[in-house]
Image 1 (cartoon, rainbow, N blue to C red):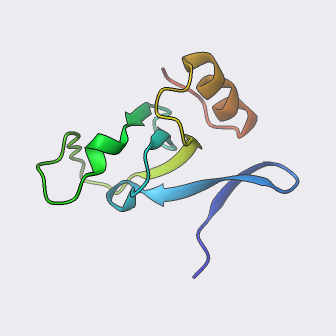
Image 2: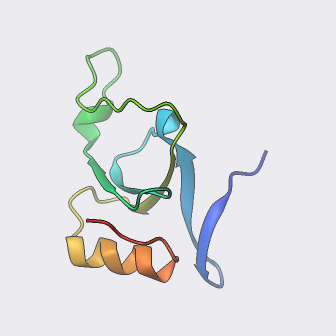
Length: 89
């Protein structure tokens, strides 16, 4: 099954994944709210208590705006805007 992607330029895309399936460090924007989540590699270590816990009644779709969790806020906002994701950060 092909994963949905958020396109902004021909040949360029950002991965879109559910919150529970985030397996790679990076900066992620939530499609519904426009909130930015910075997830460092330390937050994804298997076998330890999670550093980030998010609870919601609905599943969240996240778009990875950068593989660098410490991308500048300006750059993350620009990437969201280029993909028609209203940034709320």
